[in-house]
Image (tube, rainbow, N blue to C red; front, side, top):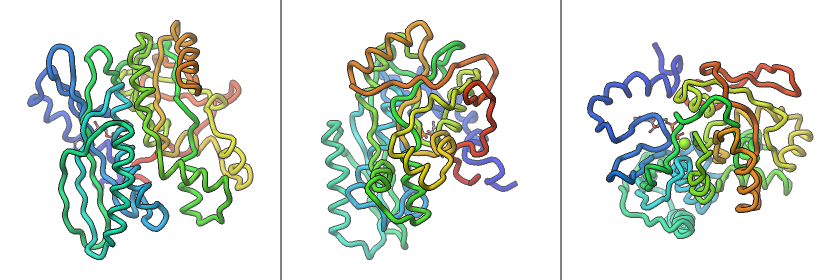
Length: 334
Ligand code: ADP
Ligand code: MG
């Protein structure tokens, strides 16, 4: 059997359970945005790692070195945000083609340093090596949270309102513009910028985790069609999503109508928006949505409801059931 028949999650499922007997009962390993390592009765360390490979995750001629430095750290910070945690330290391992200009690397580190400063997260170590011709970047992030505040993918309950912290599909639109080599205008450049410089929702994640009514949380890296499935699987639940409620930016709406893109596909199956996907106890949803808006001056958008249909997402549009063709990003299955 080939890897592409089962995909990345099929591969992980083949070995993950074998490590369970080695894991201390107070810790949680593979399966969430971060591993949760118990420090004491009250706190966890949160750890996550992400790999970015030239031509797989980024196009070196399209993304500036500063943006690449930013993005390498941002996607990791986003996994800390997904647990409701506070970032503490990062580690950077990098394999660099020998012909790389020093100026390129200085600019990469400039972007990495700027975001590190923004979230007060020092770089504490890493590894540097040469590579034949591709740039390969691996960041490991360490954060912390109280045990009371940490939010897992497994915490969704029937009746919860499913919300997202911002518009979806901008990053996928930006990537599509690059891959299709479309001629650029201000709007298209804006979408590409969203693709190259995602903002980790650290402050939002910390605030949300303090609210009792917030149940499950994760970050949206592969598109909700794929990511919501992880919450459903971990929580043994199902969901109905109202496509007309999925927030999309004016820019994406405009470019999609110009280019005749299917905006529902981009906003559900396109990756790398790095907004948070959360489920809220139905009785608390209204208050939390209002208070979130007051706190962050941006909306928390309700897009669906958790139900008991195990592992299944029902997509509806204006009351009618819809079949979605594409189902989120999965390495090996594209
Ligand atoms: P995320 O998108 O939040 O980074 P992934 O979907 O990439 O998470 O991974 C899902 C889970 O599988 C995570 O808990 C991650 O740590 C784990 N995982 C992924 N690849 C490996 C691997 N090669 N070895 C062990 N755990 C892995
Ligand atoms: Mg994640």
